[in-house]
Image (cartoon, rainbow, N blue to C red; front, side):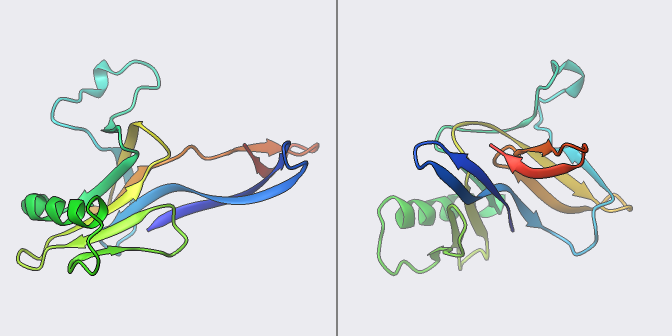
Length: 166
């Protein structure tokens, strides 16, 4: 799933109000059970006690792309992904672009293993935080990656929030 925010702002070079939609997060839903808690996903070498203020754990990208994938089928999945995206092979079985208004999503499926890879765009290079949702019983229900900051809500004159600002 991709979460999107729709907002308006004054575009100086167009000299008009512009409305746009941007992705803010992607989610891998694992279970229909609602998440009771959310925790930052930590790598094997991450120790949150050593984090400095505002430090996050997440994945790094220098290609503005992330993905969810079946780790056991990584090699055939990444090979299919590269053939579909980079070599742009027409009608490649097991690779599809998802054109549902999202920024950039591709799905790769390896028939032999049953594994899947779903890639998504981030808003640039850097580190992106990953959150794990758990049910009341402690089971993983979903994984969320924040791919962009959420625009700041501006207060109205009376102090209640209004439209988002860029």
